[in-house]
Length: 82
Image 1 (tube, rainbow, N blue to C red):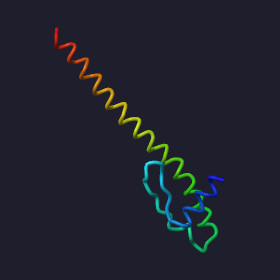
Image 2 (image 1 turned 90 degrees about the horizontal axis):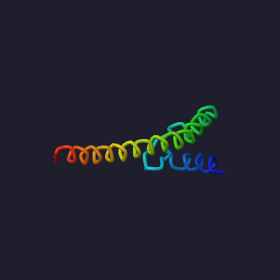
Image 3 (image 1 turned 90 degrees about the vertical axis):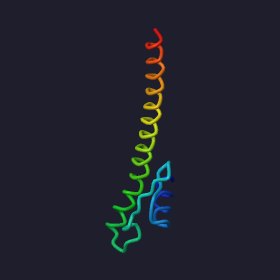
Image 4 (image 1 turned 180 degrees about the vertical axis):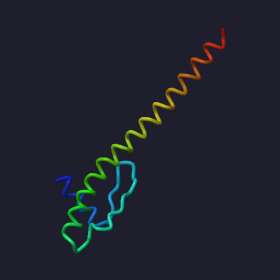
C-alpha cells in the first residue's frame, strides 16, 4: 500500500520527498518507456527509504555531537576549577 502510494505520488509530482523534506526528482517517472518507468519507480521507493534513513542519521550525529561538546565543556570546566 505504501509502495503504491509512493509510486503514485512520484508520478503525480515528478519527485519524492524524504522525511525531512529533501527532494529527489525522477525525470523518467512519466516516460513512455516501460523499463525507464520501472527503474524510476524503484528509485522512488528506495530513495524515500534510504534518504529518510540518511536524514535520521544526520540528525542523530548532530545531536550526539552537540551533546559531546556540552559534556566536554562541562568536564573541562570541572577540571580547571581545581
